[in-house]
Image 1 (cartoon, one colour):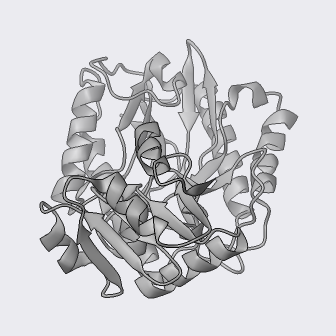
Image 2 (cartoon, one colour):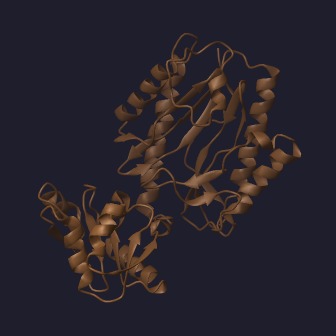
Image 3 (cartoon, one colour):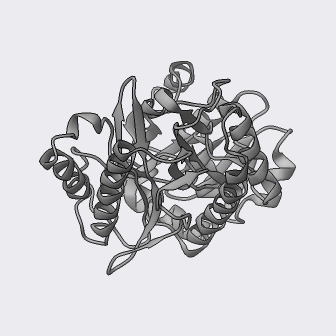
Length: 353
C-alpha cells in the first residue's frame, strides 16, 4: 500500500518536472510512510524514501513505517539533515507550499537548492478500501453518539453540556478523538455556521445545530443535524424543509464523472429560484480523510471532477442573522453510478418535546 502511494507520488513529481520532495505535514507523513508521530520529515527521491525523526520517535517509526522507508535520526538538526540528502541529487526539490515555515525554508536554502512549491494532497483524494471502511466506522460511532444524546436535549441545558456529552459518547463508543471542535449552536446562535458550543442555555422553540464528527484510526467523519426544542413553528418547518430538499438534491447529483462546481451550482440555483440564496453563505461541501477538510471541494470555483471512492460532504444551510440557521450534512462515498451515504442519522425534522 505505501509502496504504491510512493510510486504515485513519484509519477506526480515527474509530471511536474520535480525530482525530489520534502514532506512535513503530519497527514502526509502518515499517508506516504505509515508514521503517525507527526514530528519529522519525509524525503522522497527517485531512488529512496527516508523518514527523518529524532530519538523520541525512532522506535515508533520502526514499528509503523513500511519496510520501503528508511528511518534516520536527525539529531536535532532536521532542516540540515533533510537538505543534505536532497543536495545529493540534481534537479528541482518540491516542498509543501502551504505548510513549510519560512525558518525551515531558510535553513534549506543554505544548500542552494532549486525549489518548487506544490501540494500533494490531491493524491489522497481517492480513497483505498481501508480508508473507506475507517470512515464508515467513524461515521457509525458518531451516529450512535448523537442518538444517545437526544434524550438530554431540553430547555435549561447548556450548549457546552450537550457538546461534552456528545464528545464523551463518541470516545466511549471507540473514537480516538473528535474530528474538530464540536458545533452546538442554539436559538439565534444557530445562524453562525461555525458556532462552537458556549454556556448559552437552550430554550423552548430553539433550533439547535449540531455539527460534529468522530476520529477513528486517523480518519474523520462529519455530520450536521438541526433539531427543534419543542414543537416547530410553521416558519421553522418551512425553512427546514427547504434546506432538506436542497440537501437531497445535492446528494442526488454526486456520482463519478460530475464536475464538482456543478454539484454546488445545482443547490445554489435551487436557493436562487426561491429567492433565498443570500442566506447560503459557504461552499456546499468538501472531502474528508486524514484531515477534516481536504480535496475535493464542492464550491462555485472548484475545478475538479468527482471520482469513484472519493469522499465528499453535502451540507447546504440557510442562516438568517439574529433569527436562526439550519444546516443538514451527510458524508458520501462517490461510486460509479451514484453514492453511498455513510452518515445514517435520519434527516427528518426532529421535534424534541
